[in-house]
Image (cartoon, rainbow, N blue to C red; front, side, top):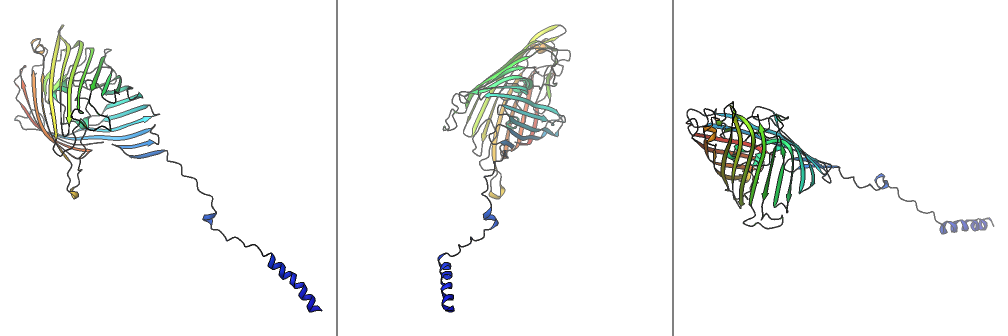
Length: 428
């Protein structure tokens, strides 16, 4: 019986094993599969790149820092004998530019200048931007009067501004309001400033007297299109009017110079401002396709006294400047962006621009009849300038200019000045 019993005992065991097999064990997993799913990367708090300069800003643009620069190497050479100027190469401007935005509504600009053998602060201001139509600017900036003078230093058609800008105030310290209205068709700016002589920058950070100037300008472009609009023949037409008024006493009087730096009119050292000074400057500009032009007039009146006798001296100037882009780029008051940037390997050479200018400045007869003008002062200067500008890329510009300036009247017979001016410039 033992075999039979043994067989009976084994049958349940085998049946149990067949009815309830052991569950399969899961396959081992790798370390990668065992990790928890990764969370999305947090966006970087700042973005950096190039936008007309090196820029660093937050994702929403509320904070922004931009680094730019302007450098100009000039050559000034006279073809006259004797030389009215010293032939020279010079670093005309060397300006690192730091600008940016703080807490969305506050914008700043700081621009020192290390050109012409000296260090100075060209711009230093802070804006409170309430909206595109209204902002408040405090600090040092260009006085809002002249059209040509308010064009950017890097966008000038010629190495130096015309005779008209000799009668304009340049950079000054003050407070002004400015903005754009009607979708950019109207721009305005105006404020109160320490006051500077014609053609001058403020020389000290603290005013030398308590007199102040009020200055402002208005620019209207009735047919300026929106971004999506197609270009029309009147889109680039605009008018400008600027002016200033104040009272200045006991400060410096202006010296008028040619583009090459030759002084041709100055007052006697014993003469000084002694009362009201006012300026008015209308201008018109037009840019269409590859051509553009602007014309500007300025009239300035200043009370000047010497030996207890005061005279109202009224000086005036006007100019017409034109451009033509030979390589077909669209004309504007800004810089030229070449349609085919400099790339010798591809046979492209950038943009070429022709420019011409006629300007005239006249000093009041009373400056001479009342004995206020210096012994070597000329009364009238007439300027004819022609040139060509090469833009290999948008940030580099080469100027080549010939200028003839003639002089009439006054206390001296001054020969005409003939100079060649060229410039190599970078700006961003």
